[in-house]
Length: 358
Ligand code: TRP
Image (tube, rainbow, N blue to C red; front, side, top):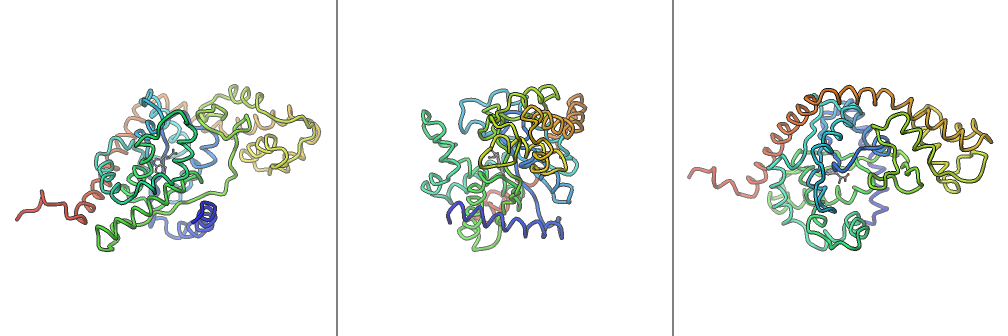
C-alpha cells in the first residue's frame, strides 16, 4: 500500500475506532510515547497530549513509554537524561495524565520488553527495515552520519514497546504510521511462524486525530530541535516574546488563507485552538488592524488557555517525590505486563525448557 493510502484508510478507520472506544473503553489499551530529548511544546499538546488525556478520561487504560534508548538513534549520547525525563513527566502530569490510571515508564528500565527485540528481529528483513519512510527521512536529514544499526531497527524496538504492554491503540501522528504498520507485521508473523496462527499478539491499530498540524513560529515544521515552538513550560512573558518574533507577511489585512498565507494562517489556527472561535472568525475580527493585533490576540489566547496547566506544572515541580513515585509505579506495572508477554512468547516458541521439569 502507498503511504498516502495507508494514511487515508487509517484516518477513516480512526472514526470507527472512536465509536468502539465510546461503547466499550475497557476493550482497549493505549500505548504511545516520546523520546526524552527536550521540553514538549504546543504542537505536542494539540497533536497528541490532549488526545491521550481524553482517552484516559474515557476509561481506556493508557501506557506512555519514555523512549530513552531512542535518544541515541541519531546522536552520540543521551545528554542529561535525568532532567529530560523529569521534565517530560512534569509535562505529562501537568497536562492531566493521572498516574493512578496511566502507566508512565522509561523503556530502558524494563528488561523483558527489551528482550522481545530478539525474536522480533527474526521476523523482519533488512529490505523491510530500509524501506521505512520515517527512518529514511531521519537518515537523509543527517547526510554526514552513517546509518546506524539502531536507527534502522528502532521501529522494531517500538514494536516491542507496543506489544510488550499489550497495546491495541496507538495514538500517533502521521510520521509514526510506518512504525505501527511494522508492529502489525511483526504481530502477524509472530502468530503465524511461532504460534501456529494462535493470536499471541493482537494487531494494534493507529489512532489518528484530524487536528491540523501546527507549524513552528518560523514557518517550518514545529520541532524540538529547531526551537521554533512554544514550550508548555514557557512563562507568559516568554510566550509573548516568541509570538512577537513570529514570521508573518507584508499584507496588513488579516485573512485566513492557509495556502497563500501559511504563517498568518498558522497563528490564526493557534489562537482558534486556544479559544472557541474559528480561524476565519478571528481573522474577520482583526480585519485591517494588522499583524501586531493578531499577535496580541494569539498571545492572550495562548496564555489564557495554558495558565491552569502552567500553574499545575509549577505545583507538581515543587513535589519531586511525586515524579519519582510516578516513575516507580509505572516501571512496576510495565514490568508486570512485559514479563507476562515475554512468558507467552517463550511458551509459544517452545523456549521454556529451563523451567520445565522432566
Ligand atoms: N518514536 C516516537 C517519537 O519519536 C516515540 C515512541 C517510542 C513511540 N515508542 C513508541 C510512539 C511506541 C508510539 C508507540 O515520538
